[in-house]
Amino acid sequence: MVPRHCVIYEVVLNPASIHLLTSIVEAYEGVGTVTTLDRRLALVHISTAPGCEDVVRAVVEAERFRLGIRSVREANRFAP
Image (cartoon, rainbow, N blue to C red; front, side, top):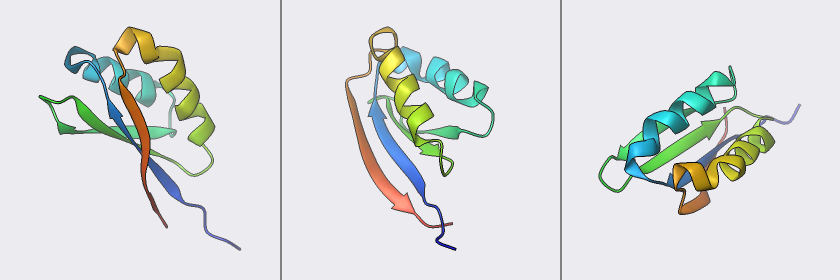
């Protein structure tokens, strides 16, 4: 069996929207978690569970304007 990988997305957004992004992602139980790396820059990581990458990408795209998302990139992959 090939191990599945966790994908981490690095997101820069409006600082006031960090809590809302966290709430939205965590509302999808088991999909991912949000970690704030720099509150001033509003730089966060979204760590996704294996197989949930499409859900996280869809949420980020759907909420891009409302949350003021300026940048999204795949930061790293980690094996379980």
